[in-house]
Image 1: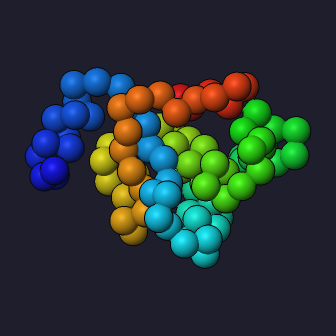
Image 2 (image 1 turned 180 degrees about the vertical axis):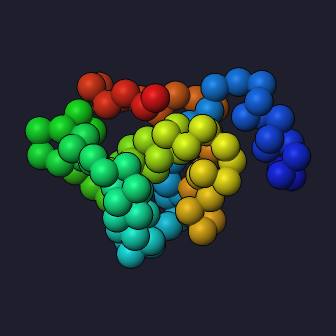
Length: 100
């Protein structure tokens, strides 16, 4: 997929940003730290938060990466995260964890 076709997907329909499942734990931790520092609020992945369960790095990183992506306008480059972000067109929301 080229950058141009990725842009067309984003323009044509709703999209979300999730973590690449092949990302290392250290990369996911860095993504969480970066996004939470920018957003200033990551209560959603803290105990009792809407996206805490399942309690794993992939789901926590995906939730905050998507929040960062949406907060910054949903542009492809806002999901890059040094190659560890993926743009998806199927809503990854689950249970009480709603992806914007």
